[in-house]
Amino acid sequence: MEIKQLNTKHGIAGQLTFTKGNSGFPFIMINNDSATALISVYGAQVLSFQPTNEPEDLLFLSQKSHYEEGKAIRGGIPICWPWFGPDRLDLNRPDHGFVRNGLWTVLATEATSESETKIKLRFHNTKQSESYWHQAFTLDIEISVSDTLTIELITRNTGAQAFSITQVLHAYFSVGNIDDVQVLGLENAHYLYKLDDGEEKNQSGALIIANEVDRIYTNVNNELIIDDRAFNRQIIVAATNNKTTVIWNPWIDICAKMPDLAYDDYQRFICVEPGNVDTDCVEIPPGEEFRLITNFKIVRN
Picture (spheres, rainbow, N blue to C red):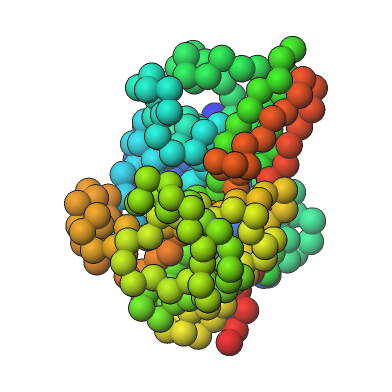
């Protein structure tokens, strides 16, 4: 659907407009009494969220990110579904699934008040995605923009057989300096250390990033806190229907090798990714649905 048609059908005067973004991707721009936000219809990806009283964006978005079909946008909140990580079946399928690499359909928009705007998008199967994953499904995302950001990822099994998924909201949070960041709420939690062949380890105290981190935390609390002393704020990540959270920062060497990151971008973000991975694989029976719900909130220190 063209930008003009999207604005005619789904635009909300004074609150929500569609615009042509990078490489012509349709972007949704929201400006209500509570916050501004930017959402890419390609990938159904929130790229920016900033409450009106906050000086900094919640999210990190790389200035070197690719905006082209078949590639993921580096930053914001990409959706990893129906698998997380590399293709374990070795079928040359894309890392982290296929829904972050395609256009979604706008189903509905709504201004529930002057301070809250809601958007609903759906991923429609294509011949290419069907070749990757032979399941009958619908996948919707509901995004609510107010003084907080809420995302619901809804998987429905429309087929005759059960299927299993892993998934995360691969959120990139903007921080003032990674040296001044700690993640609270993981104390004494177990994690699978992906840099050490998945060995299980135990978190001691708050998580501080001082080198490359790639961990799957299991049986996590429903609420985690990113404490950012440089920006003088805390980010509250409150998730529902998940038992695992991924924490990632590429650090110096990996960041320097990534073409869609600046060499020092590792200092400016941390990924805290609520979802269902590894031991938290979700099976969905025929006719049933599963909702992964996460709320993101900024609190001043």
